[in-house]
Image (cartoon, rainbow, N blue to C red; front, side, top):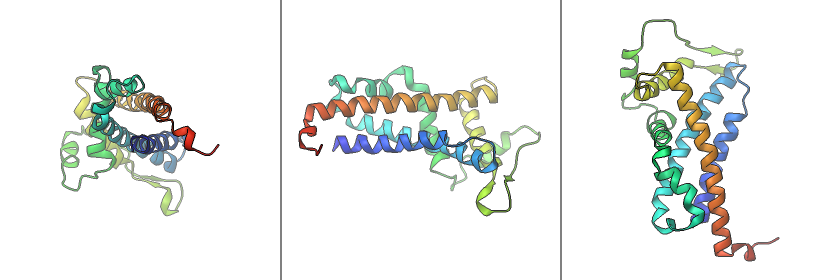
Amino acid sequence: MTIIKIGRVMNAVAYGLTDVGSYNVNTALCIRQYRRALFVLGGYLHQGITLVKAIKGRYLTEPGFEALRLIALDSEHKKARDYVKKIRNFTAFHLDEYDETTRQTLLRLKPTTYPFMAGDDNTAGTFYFEFADYIDLAFLVDTFADGRSFEETSEDILQSIMDLAYKFLTACHEFLHALYTKSKISEHLYK
């Protein structure tokens, strides 16, 4: 069962990484896809870390689990874990149906000109309601800035997601390989 669960989370995180990397951000459609893919990737990472924490008791002493243990529990990755948890809980999969973030974020915005909406042509699927994603990102920046600028904080959040995703996927692969080896499952698979 653990092999299947780790395989599932690897599929989700790899999907998110592929989706993020699939777009050259030169059209409204591509910018929308790229930015939403980053939020989805953050959400999947949080779910993956939650899974790792749920199975840790059984594998804590296994050398193949060490990299995942560090990602899920070590203080080195706490900031990135905090980012993806907030992303999962407020921007990736929950769209503020209870008005928990949008109103407060709008109240804190400084008066200026903000990007609102764009489209590549008149086709319905090429629109990008950029202001909505800006509000989501502003919520995250407000939460984590701690004196840093909007640009510095948002870049740190996005880079932390990408770094964590690669580390997490690599750690999952190492653990999966250790599970394959220990269980001798390869003896039962067709070659």
